[in-house]
Picture 1 (cartoon, rainbow, N blue to C red):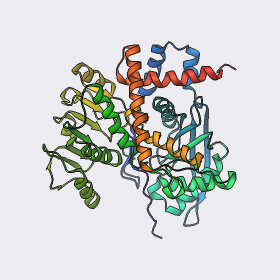
Picture 2: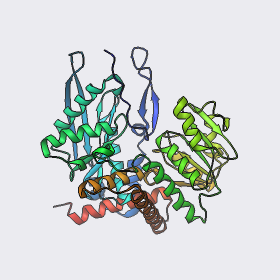
Picture 3: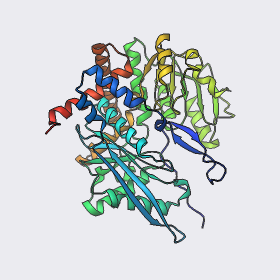
Picture 4: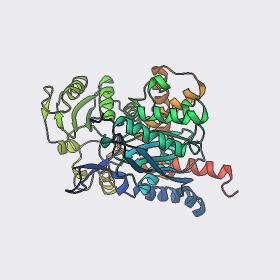
Length: 444
């Protein structure tokens, strides 16, 4: 029987190619880059030292609130039984319900899920939305499962964890390998036990209580973050040149909105290739070209270029939107951009950070720059609880307010502790969680 393929949530995380070897039917998997990097905990510890936190408080902030591991056995379409392992790590709930994605991937690993859950705690605090962090997933390859098999797997997973998630407890969202349909199945299964509860997940279809503006939220948030940073330096998007690495959901929306605001996008790349035009690329036309050909190659509105060259291309603002670790000691010294906006997760490694700082390049950190997605997820949750949906203009305007306010709060931390934007963002996030923890009485 031919399987109906299931297309997951657009990738906004960072990845490395990972080969399973010649004996596998999967020639290439994409391993989350975050799982190979221990930087977030190191930054957290540095932030804790800057803030002068008690060592016991610091340790308590690192330990997850709850780790869940469940077996999910389902009948396959051919009548055989298959078992999968599901995970959910709930890191911290001092500031509110825990929030984070659910990913379907063969390499879902408890340590990686733990690190990502912790990162969500800090990101939510930086954005000043009343959430803690969580992350989860099922160790499976969604490309090998039919749509009906994925539905059964999602429903069994929900049955196993339904009493541990909830509107005011833990609110899942889509991630790698999952999408709005996955959230619809979780909502339906959860509602069988607890009554209709649209706020139990975000990233839902619009018809089931999803928010307008959610698809563009991360890319639009990147633009708002860029505007806040440029304003601090007496500049605006209009008239500046931009290079965008990665042209998926985040990169395409960011490039489109930048062009609408008068910026000139002169170079774009993705996994299929790269294109440049010193006079500015017609982004809507490039989006149409990619939708029709699934590639940036042979685009008539610009010249092809080496994708690796994009990172060191002459431009005012560089926006990495795809892979982690793309800026490193090999290429950081050659970067010509004056500003780097980290729309991807961890695109700049620590050595590159030092090199760029010496060059005077301003780096806007990922923990803030790509927080537009979780912020609009919060707006969706609020709308569901109220039973009153916002129009897209209100969503976008409120997102702009949150992104602008968060930037100014980061700047205050930078001035207070004499640190760069990355450390300013982490000290802001850690400080908010620590204060909430202490106010609630963590030793009681």
